[in-house]
Length: 116
Image 1 (cartoon, rainbow, N blue to C red):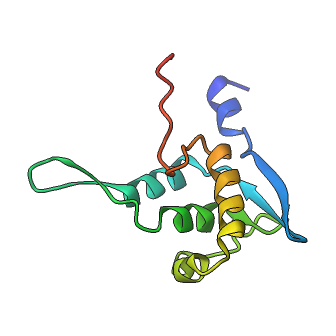
Image 2 (cartoon, helix red, strand yellow):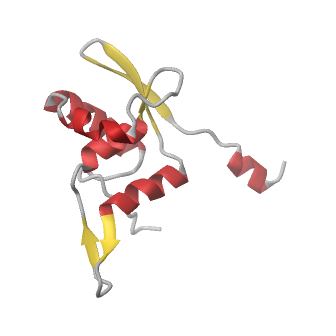
């Protein structure tokens, strides 16, 4: 098996968590899902200046990363408003786990490791 095949054969990280008696899985995003998520946070204005849009960033990350124990997403993109209505203690736990797994900071933005 060559290096490319080995890399493409790597599996996504996932972690089963329990919140108030409810078990579910938080999983790592694929590179494509990460790009989709990032594209919802950043855009360029007409002058080419970077604009940051944090609207619903927590709910969007929860929707992309929280799954049942079989790996099926618990929430679809259309469920953002429902996710926003979760108790904050629940949403915060879900977001924190997803952010940590996907190397995001507490704002849901990509963490850049300046050491590499």
